[in-house]
Length: 469
Ligand SMILES: Cc1cc2nc3c(=O)[nH]c(=O)nc-3n(C[C@H](O)[C@H](O)[C@H](O)COP(=O)(O)OP(=O)(O)OC[C@H]3O[C@@H](n4cnc5c(N)ncnc54)[C@H](O)[C@@H]3O)c2cc1C
Image (tube, rainbow, N blue to C red; front, side, top):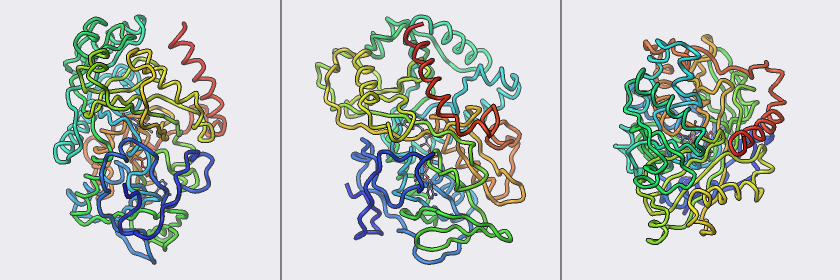
């Protein structure tokens, strides 16, 4: 596949840096090749783009980052507000998480369960938040119907990887049914293995009918095509390396020239370096997740694994496995990975996935793995995303902090960010994901440099709790 912008034909992309680490790297990259993902290998030729920025340019609205969030913002700005945005991407289109995820679109965002929403904000707010997240899921569903992105609808199977996790699932299913009106149900381990998939660890499961898996890069390319058809401009190989604001005008420095903008929407996920904008410094915690894809399963392997569903599957480990059968009979499985980019290549992280797959599906022990990659997830310090204008005096907006749950909600976050840029404030504005900036670590900003130390200790504790205790 041609991995550089067609408008940039002739300029070879820079090699992919597997050790890229947003907390350590000095640059967001410049025209770097894609990570070696299954999605990149199977998405086909990237659509036309507008090439890198060449010379100084004036733009009404600039969006930094061309993942789901940035492209959806551009799409909704054009479609619903008639604003033609300029998207600046450091590397290739959708180079970050958007070309690396598991493609599981769920009726969720952030890392908190609905029962935790009630505990944190009370039932009335939790109900309104649910309405908003559900509207977000509808936005996503609508887009998956407009774009050829290999949708796999049907829902999400949340598997108890040990019997002791069943009580938690029963409680969550009850909350979903009783308070929020979802048709969530509990399955026994036997039912899971007989009617869904032969996961040998499954002690039972919760099934929610909302959930669609997609080919994420095809979806992103679809967002981009629709946005450009409406007048948006998308410039890959155009990293923003400096940002000054004077008299209401933003001056964004890129290697090809300065882009002057009236408003800036930041959609850099976990890939924005801390120095890019003062509004985001120490407010996003980048966490690695890795993923593998097997070769297509044979008839015998399909029978032995009893994979009868293409729906999204996750399990109850704190650092959960997420997996599914892809349309071409391959299995994708992912989980959390290394603490730092420098260690991401280590065999132990790859082994975690290969061994996890074999434990769940013994017939797949030793199966060829065709694709292996990793990427940085944008985790917020209170586990919920934000779509905000952090300073009412500045025409700057951001949408991020999905915590590994951004495939679906990023579409709606882009829609809401487009509304804010267009000056609209709906009745949802006082919800916790819209009414405040991303918080610093709970202990205070001073704790930011120590987060990885804490993360490393937490990972050990999670492993102990999930596998032994
Ligand atoms: C391995 C993995 C598996 C995942 N699985 C799932 C899943 O199954 N379901 C789910 O819901 N979520 C999943 N996620 C999370 C999901 O992929 C993200 O929430 C979503 O893609 C975020 O999109 P985004 O547009 O906000 O950010 P990104 O897609 O990360 O895009 C940010 C972009 O900003 C660019 N950028 C950064 N700095 C600059 C700069 N200075 N100038 C210009 N451009 C810049 C980057 O190059 C990047 O392309 C997963 C993530 C990973 C890594």
